[in-house]
Image (cartoon, rainbow, N blue to C red; front, side, top):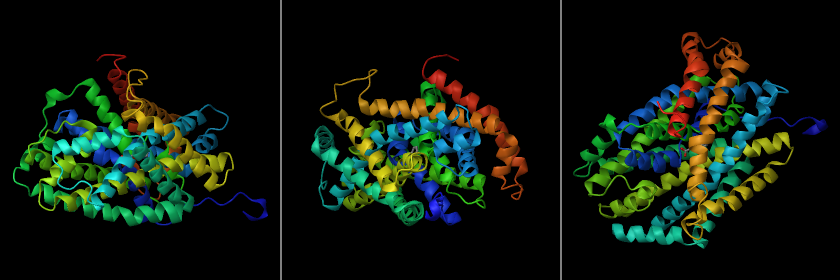
Length: 455
Ligand code: PHE
């Protein structure tokens, strides 16, 4: 920052670092908590099928679009739109993204707190020999109390703040690069355990044998919302990370790798959960509590259950942490670059707001359980409004921006590294997806799922 010059922006240092950070953002509670519980509630394989289509046709083009915006502008989520489309209202797309980051964090830090506390319980033997009624009891006692969940939510916020204050290279890149392999290994161990249980096949079928009669408009919207949430798109996390990418990074290839690896993690999480659930005669449709009531009960009934359960919650905690880091980085990049705050100030302020307003979500299962807004608890409201409304709307705007405002020439230039990547044919398909297919599909699904139009 010498000579009064603008400080140089930090960036990711290696291709592997880029992949680790972006995959670390995508992999999170979405894979381990939302994907299995939503699959269980929406009828199994048919939901998975719709989800996979959403990822391929909408998720990947959108992630590429965000990387394009971020790297081309080399700026935070709001500054990027201001740079690429000066003196237009497009910057509001960036502002909406920053707002979405807060909204998601309000409830995400709550669930992450549950996961941290369960990992801790596992390590200290707090869940040993609990039957399913006991695990249900433990969970409702925990979420029904005030101090514990709030304390864990703040612990989570402190952990990610430390990483964010350490910076893009020393914090985000180093952390994700170290922890992702650990997550994969732990997940694979859980899979081997679940799949070798007698009766495991019922769970595998549940995940892979679709019953297409189960596909309805709200199911499609739910699958689309999950695809957005899962791939961290529609709100600027990937735009922000794109801005830390060097000019040599192959943007489309990185996006496809992230989408494939992330989907693999979701399926592996499903394969660790459903076979075990079926093998021990539990129901797959427990919803959000699947992870916290059913899973501990299932693990208790198997040999070395305590060990595997602890591993499972540790891997969930690792996944949640990588995702939250990217969510916190969105406002932090915005405040440091646009408002010229220091990184620690921006981090402490953002995390503080997330903790204070996020307590409304946390208390939704205790003192505020009867306080409903639009018929939903704060927790459900934050979740629904972000995944099913803000992210899809953000997604439409981002596609329109890259496809029409920035335009195909600039988009192709950025996605082919100035023509050096020789991926012209696939980029033609990509441009059609970004300009027409994705925005129209998102709009239709959104209006249908909300019941505004019926097709
Ligand atoms: N993709 C993350 C998950 O699956 C959540 C997330 C959403 C992260 C949006 C960043 C932005 O848990």
